[in-house]
Amino acid sequence: MEYKYTIIDSDATSNLQLQHYLEEYGDFICTSQARNSDEGINAILKFSPHIVFIHLNGQAYEYFKMVMELHQYLDDLPIIIGLAKGKQYAYDAIKNGFFDYWLIPYNEFEIRKSIFRLKKQVPVTPEPQTLCLSSYRDFQYIDTDDILYLKADNNATEFIMKDGAIINAFKTLKTFENQLPRNFVRIHQSYIVNTNCISRISYGKSVCTLKHGKKQLPFSKSYRKNIDQLKQLLSKNAISSLN
Image (cartoon, rainbow, N blue to C red; front, side, top):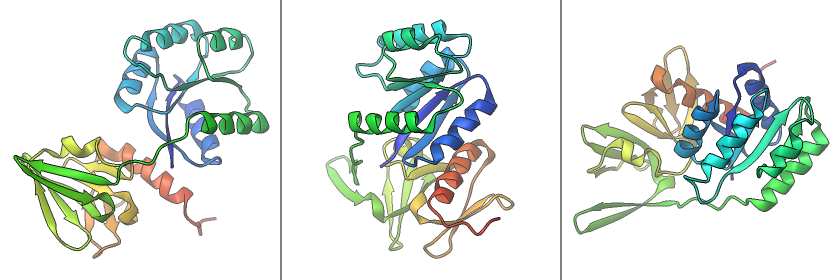
């Protein structure tokens, strides 16, 4: 299982460094990034991350207020971890409900202990594997593992199954975008793909190739971030031949 996380940091370089650092621990996937407290609140409400990393920089007290504001919208806040180059904000961070406080540069042993405590406190429950498609008084149940990809068809959606069957649902593709398990990713205005079925990503041709039938699906620039995260995840779990 994976833990979704959001990074709130105005510095793109340190943002990227944290993502690379977390890759070593596995089970973590970055679903959103924000540059300030307003963007941070929006990202948290939109993506519902398990963990939020906040680089306190010189705006620590603005972020402490942000955490207090989140209580107005959420019954259960995500795990919040503060990042800073010194200990000057540590007391106030813990006082404001932060789960932990990581010093930069990172200490591998301290962070490993923090991550194990985090996993013990917030076990990720398995996602539902069955999708119910309902139309009037008709209910159809689909095992999500059997879905190859979804294709928009005006205001309806086609489910393309691994066995070649096509199942129609009279709802838009957007409806299913946040209902499906995390291995389903929007790559195009017209496509959501089961990432477990992808065998190749070609940036030159802007297509993803599927394992079943070598079908190629296009991805668009507006969903390039999703493709980059997908490549990162697939590469993490693969044996690489690159030097």
